[in-house]
Length: 390
Image 1 (cartoon, helix red, strand yellow):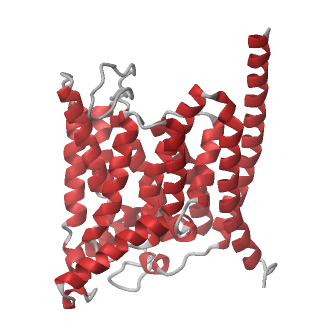
Image 2 (image 1 turned 120 degrees about the vertical axis):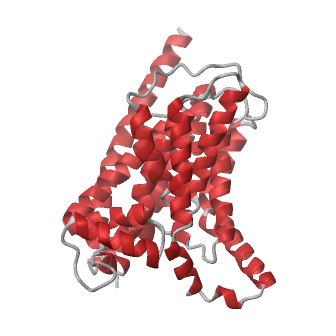
Image 3 (image 1 turned 180 degrees about the horizontal axis):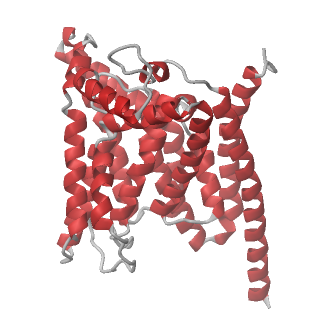
């Protein structure tokens, strides 16, 4: 009788969690769209809506190709992200706003795939954390240039990571090994589409591309260590991701741009100090909220996080540490690292609840507080835009 009562109580709790999460998800989508509509194309958006080399508006896909060729040799190597940006600019503001909301939802879904937590409350919690734990929500998600550089490209990055992580059992640790076998069917036609996905992942951002290349390499080596031959698509994805990293980092435009930064005038010790300061600011300011939540869940869960979560955390560490090689670490650039940490948070939440279902309300309540912080940011912006706050 007691077991039956507990089962009914759990079923009722789950039903209420789903209902409330669905309501908050609907509110989130409405607020996201309204916020996107209130922020016009600005700054870099206006420049990238032209041919770049001259003040002529882009009017076709061939104009975008011409612009990105000039950009690659004269300003920077992020041809894929800025190509996506120009495509969205070409479609116009309203279409771009709708696409941004759709991509935000797809990105939340990709986090649920990577974390293997596909429940509606997890999906809503990811949306809340994307806003509530974000170092610069406006410039990484709602500014069109920021959305292309971080929101859109992180979707492809996480899909690439999912392809590899699903090939590993989650039992055990990276260092202790595992006897488990992943019981998943092969992805259809993966050998063909992993090539453009790997290239796009590597050719994304200077810090995220190499981190994801390391993840793919680590999965290959782990399978090799456990006497499992790596599949052809895994090798192809790894090689094309590496090629994308090379195209992005070694672009002639990067050297043109870095020459204009003025850092060459500084001494080596001063450079080391400034870059160390940038790394500390990234960890203790930009990423601090998400690291705090992650630490709390790690304490609740225990030391053995699972090999996939350990790999994601190593990638997050690499993507943060990569900025030591850059003269500038803007707050919006922490978005990709934050999303990797959110993947681990959602995964740990599922594992914690599988061991102790009584923690569902405290964890859900914590997610509500984070969601409220994100919605507050958007609501404040809308109130100022509408003239309700002067």
